[in-house]
Length: 190
Ligand code: AMP
Image 1 (cartoon, protein in one colour):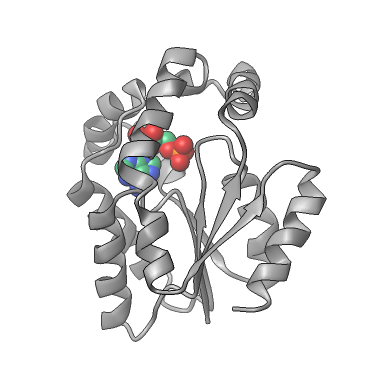
Image 2 (cartoon, rainbow, N blue to C red):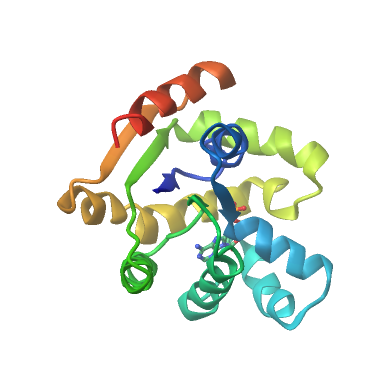
């Protein structure tokens, strides 16, 4: 079983790469951002709760996110493994994920960060915003706020996973295919 955490700032390419990796390794892809957006679109209670945070580019509170993630994993009892995309984003979430997986005799196999500099990411997100309809991709101030959230709350996970000898990083600049190859060469060692 492979349980992969894709790590990286907004726009780093986690979602794009997860699409290739999930079919290659036959994994279930869980993007917490996508689940929140689905709930907003369908105006569920969870969606109403998450919306104001997402609109500002702030993180949704931990417990809400953790409960949602656990429910998504529980929906897939037959899975051969998971790609966690956009989760965990705080140390509390990372600790909860370890505890939750341990109860199921599972664990994070590895964490792979896609590295790219902020200016490249802002350009990618603004371009995506032209077609995605995502308000958090259309405003540079909100994008920069998402980076601040990442730097303050998510970047410490590097040390968290390094301490477990599970942290890997690759260059996230290049063609989609080249980056997929870089990821697969790390995954095949896990
Ligand atoms: P993403 O699609 O991964 O860029 O996520 C979009 C937005 O969803 C983020 O800016 C947060 O508001 C929210 N979100 C997604 N994943 C998480 C998470 N693990 N913890 C808290 N908020 C999240």
